[in-house]
Length: 299
Image 1 (cartoon, rainbow, N blue to C red):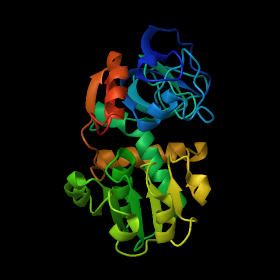
Image 2 (image 1 turned 180 degrees about the vertical axis):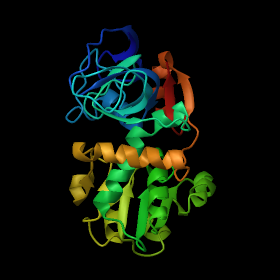
Image 3 (image 1 turned 90 degrees about the vertical axis):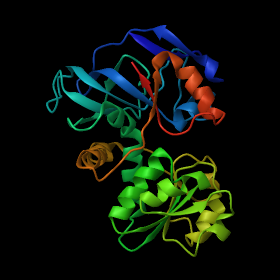
């Protein structure tokens, strides 16, 4: 199959188009013919070698946490989907989304009314948003501060939190104020010091940015107990939890997110779609700020 492989850690040029072989799915897996694969900020960090302790990727490895496509083969222990079914897959352990086929451990059916692009853009961000709100124990009437509120995870978490009756304050660029307000959140300028920009204490903080002032967030929340970051390597220095996928909760989180999209209660920004063989260029443009928002590789 055709895939984007990594020749080693480094700049985007280490991503190369290659022909590789894929084996059959394990007993608990399904093999999917990929239509679209998502590109996320964690992919860039893995490629650069910043997360080698968590996501080691050897030469010839394939990036990609999420994809959507058609089931081709199912393992012996799989009984909830069959060949020909349309699914979105989440790949937190094996990765491999930047390819024509992938063996997946976690999946959710794609409802007929959910576009392929939305299905492919949802798994990683949807799972993270559902997981962190559960870990934060966010309740009706509480105030949640979201750092990076217009990103894929932040946008989903905002909508889920507002639906629970929480107040959401979202730190974003001024150009994103209108989009954030449409989701029911109060936008603040992420360029300003958090202590000045946030109107008073908050109950919980979701850091979906990875580049925010965590000490200030901890001060606003009255301690680190209810502050969670998705990707900031400095989190442990201030006692903040660095949250990653919890396998036992993944299937339910994927269903909750996909059900929201299908019901129209959860909306996703329209992604940028580019051909698979432009993956290196996509990484370059995301890193230099020339490209923003969700990006999908089309196969």
